Image (cartoon, rainbow, N blue to C red; front, side):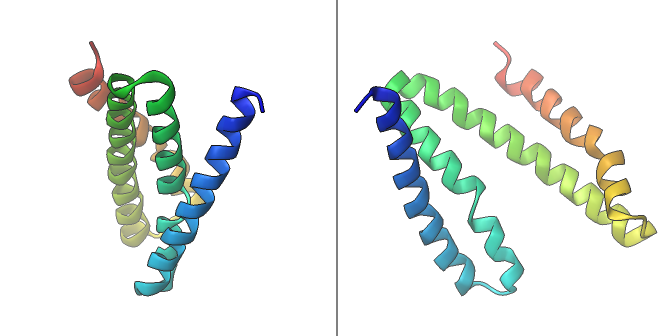
Length: 118
């Protein structure tokens, strides 16, 4: 098999295995709506990090992992803002999510400038 095909196969196998594990974890916790949190993003991140480490080394993976952390923190701040606005003022969800999306990008840009920029 070609190198790229092996990488794709590894991503599918690692991702699928981790999706199953996180789905089991999601079924254990209440409420069941939290199960989705344990399914998608962590599996993709873990599969990507393991393959990236194999291809580019640990220093590159360190930068990628920090970038993922910055994105997650920025999303957390955005999600908190959207939740607050939805509960306080009760606008349509799409309007609140769209109007507050600059918060996500702003926090990500600020964290990048503080922590990731060389």
